[in-house]
Every structure is written in structure tokens, then in C-alpha cells.
Image (cartoon, rainbow, N blue to C red):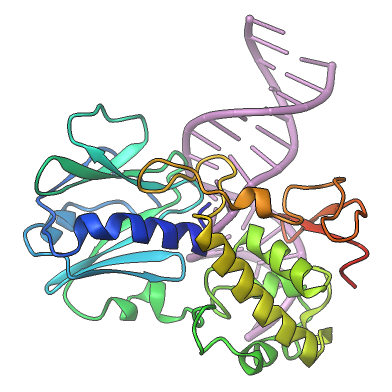
Length: 271
DNA sequence: CGAACCTCCTGCGGGC
DNA sequence: TGCCCGCAGGAGGTTC
């Protein structure tokens, strides 16, 4: 699925088409997402969209009377299309724009979310209220991560993937950041030293920022708002590279399942 | 509280 | 060629 870089890439792509303009109609072709898309989704229509924000892996389209909350789940994408094109299978929700275009929410697995939020602060919504800091913000500090790791026996990889601790780090970038920081994914969080946690904070920031620059990572589904894939996949050091040589030291990359998720690391670079 | 496990859903690639 | 199985970028829920 889209992790933070893919969601940010999507945000940047759709913003110019939405900000300052009203959504003129919503077509729900299949309401069966993670939360059913209710009829009040139409309430978003008419008022100009004042901005598109990202919070973790959520997108928020604000108006001065309510907002749209969108999550892309595992297989979701938002594309800007000409209205005349035929809709594809799994184009579940269509946001009509003034002029000739529309935005299509496409999500084969239907793990995503499209919700209308009434007036009020979207960040107070239960789905957003208990999220941890943004990894690219100043609030994501070594001290914060250190406090989150204190006493925790869970593997460090699972801790950095916990959205209550820091948002946006999914399965790809967790493996990548740990490689960059030289830390084994399975290490108990409480056993990672302060200096190594400082390296990890920096590594998370660096890998996410570098991926955003490349338009994110496409493994299978992800496309940006123009329907194009992201190019960070070719820059991945470990994810999906089992048995291939480490890009730093040529040792074959290891693979194991950790907390039900595929995990990759270099046994030499990561200790 | 934390940790381990399960679940939602569709599509695809590998093995036979 | 076709069928079955396992696996996939998320995250909320249950159980102990």
C-alpha cells in the first residue's frame, strides 16, 4: 500500500486540481470500503476546497464546512481523469470537478476509507486523534522515540510501524530505515541504545524524504494522480531483495516474517 | 498495558 | 492450460 511517500505524492498531484474549487458531485459506484461510504458524502459538494492536507497516511480535503477524509488502504489510488473515459473495475468513488475532469478513488482490495466529516477540526476525528507525530516534523525526536521504546520487548521494526508512535512508516520503509541505521529488525526496542535511536530517527526521515523525491515506491498497484508509478523501488536497499547482494557490502539479503509481515535485512550491515 | 494472532478483500505469481 | 495456495504496501480487533 501507499505509505507516507506515496500518500504525499498523491496529495501533491491532486491538490492543484482541487484547491480553490468545489467538488461538484460524488458518484459512489461501490460503497463497500473499510467503512461504508454513506450518502452524506454528497454534503462535501458545493463549497470550495480550501486545502489538501496529509496526516500520516490519511488525506484530508478541507472546506469551510466539513471535510473529506481519505485513506488508500493497501491498494488504493486517486487519479485525475477526463470525465469521458470509461470507469474501470474498482473505481469505487468518483469526485466530480468543475470543467472536464474528475478524481477517481480506485481500490481493488477495498481496505481504504472515504468519509465525510462534518464541520469541526478533522484532526479530532477518532481515526486521527491518537496518531503519533509526523516523521518529517520537528516533533519526531530521538527523545520521543526513546520514550516509546522504553520497556518494550517488541521488535524495533514493529515499534516504528506503530502509528501511535510515529505515523507513515509502513512495511517497506521500516526495513529500509533499519538498514540505513544499521539496526536488526528483530532487536527488542528496549535494547536499542540512545545513539542508535538517534540514527534511526535520521534514517526514517532520510528514506521517506528520498522516496517522496522519486514519487514513491510502486510494487504493484501504486500510481500517482497521473496514473504513473513511483521510481523509488530501484533505490530500495533491502525490501524485496531476499538473497540478492546488499548494496553496501554484497552479503546476501536475509528475509523472514516478523509480526506477520515480510522483513528484510543485511546480516552484516545490521547488528 | 503490551504482545501475538486474526481479519477484512481482490489479484497475481508460483508450483504442480 | 488450469487450479490451488500463499502472499501483498494497512490497521483495527480479540485474547491472554
